[in-house]
Length: 140
Picture 1 (cartoon, helix red, strand yellow):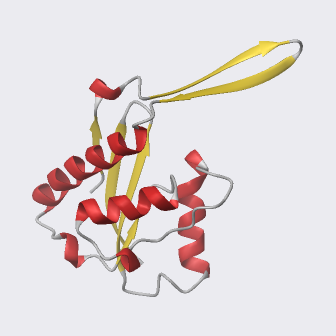
Picture 2 (tube, rainbow, N blue to C red; picture 1 turned 90 degrees about the vertical axis):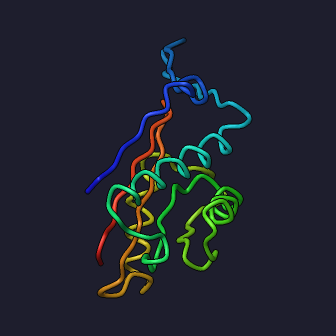
């Protein structure tokens, strides 16, 4: 089961907009300096609800595929969730957060680099502006 949770109280924590000027389209991103903290707390709350709903335990998962916001973010999320850092798949790059492309990129990395061998159970977590959090158990 997929599980999604909205946090409308953080609707302004991350905003993306665009404007057209001098025949050029420009994207503008505005982020609250505490966005990563907002994401971590929102993920923690969503994950508690998801695990309670499904009856699963966090230690049942062999892999955690978190949002690829930054290496620091993944490390802090691991601490917040009480997980070993080696369970977290980290494909962050020096180019920063790849937003919508980060989840498929990380899944591809796990599949192509032997991280996700058959019969491994993974927890996939993603965040979006709004703030919204989604999670699902995935069996490789």
